[in-house]
Image (cartoon, rainbow, N blue to C red; front, top):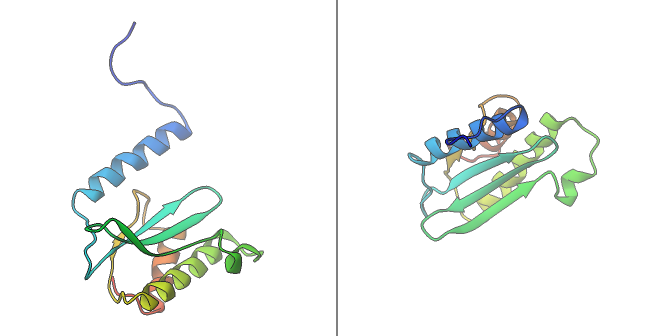
Length: 127
């Protein structure tokens, strides 16, 4: 019987790599009451954004492609990510949040992650 870490293949390897990067990022990034953390979770089909105060452990605002206002649209995933970014920024501003710390969740800052962040910035949320 071999000891040590199991060698992963395919999607399991990608998920483990994303998890490692997220842990490495979270060592440096934390959300406060003045500047909460905007965390992005991405799957193959959906994207979720939450504004979290890590000191209290509360979610202040959230949006996802599963929301009724976004779900019915027949657009591509990048366009849906833009809608999620604008919606989470609108909800965060309604909750009194002006500036956030961006947590990309271990994903590369490209594609849907960048589209969500750009839309949130355009809606008035400062990073």
